[in-house]
Image 1 (tube, helix red, strand yellow):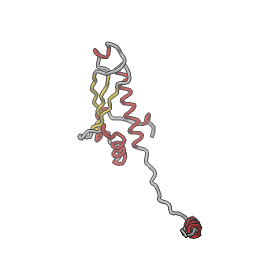
Image 2 (image 1 turned 30 degrees about the horizontal axis):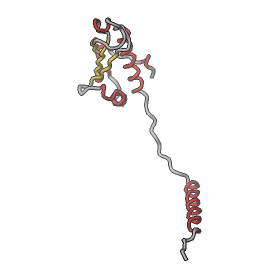
Image 3 (image 1 turned 135 degrees about the vertical axis):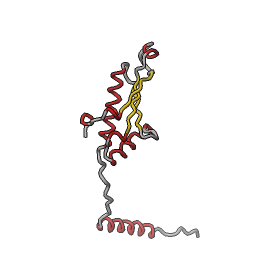
Image 4 (image 1 turned 90 degrees about the vertical axis):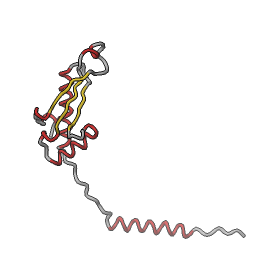
Length: 136
């Protein structure tokens, strides 16, 4: 799934605008350009497996109430920060839909086991051939 294919229901989102830090001169002190996007994960209607993966990907950004907090303050305008926050959310949701391949444990072949035992025997023979040091 690509981030462009993700459909996010508007009723699952709520936005708050904050005073941003960084470049922007005095405009930063006057205008609330940073966006804090709150996403109600239950309202997204995700598959349970994708929901768990999204919580894992988001980590500490998920609150105890099941909300995902994304703060965007990279740009100097509200609209650019809104788009950035929504894009990051779409990327997270797309990443949550990627199913991880199960690892199948492998075993060494019979030939590999025999080869290992032969090497151990050779090494043992080398060590056995070393004599004890005698002080006469």
